Length: 210
Image (cartoon, rainbow, N blue to C red):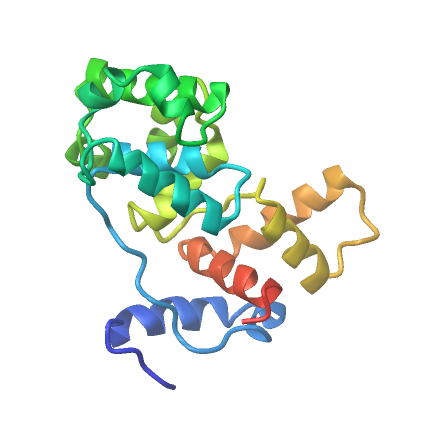
């Protein structure tokens, strides 16, 4: 098995060996994946996620870079974001709704004195419950945050369209109605635990032809 330099062998073997027990999923498993990162300034990552909703990666990057440029290219504090007038945020390409949501996150961070350390200590479900209190922050957004910024191995974002499409195709669920499809996907994904994040990444890659 080929190894990537940044993946410790015990980690790659643990999730690959577990996921290979699913014969259908095993057909699309290839080389080990890059390690899920644990990043800093999670609150700002959440703001970035809101900005990128319903946008291509390229456009989202442009808007986020414009956002950082408002603060001299540095990552702003929650107080700085709150002090930024709505019209200034709209000028970088954000809709009225997204401007409101960005301010909602910044206000929540300030009021709750939210830190990375606090989020690191919470379980996946606790993070979802905690952050979805913020108007404009949905479950899917927090699930992506858990996977790609908090480095959690066992997240299953069932409402992700790409993941749904991949599972319907791989497990031949086309004949089922939406409710039955959803139930079947939950049953299938339960067998992947505690490595559901990695299974999802393979399914996304398979859908994209990687």
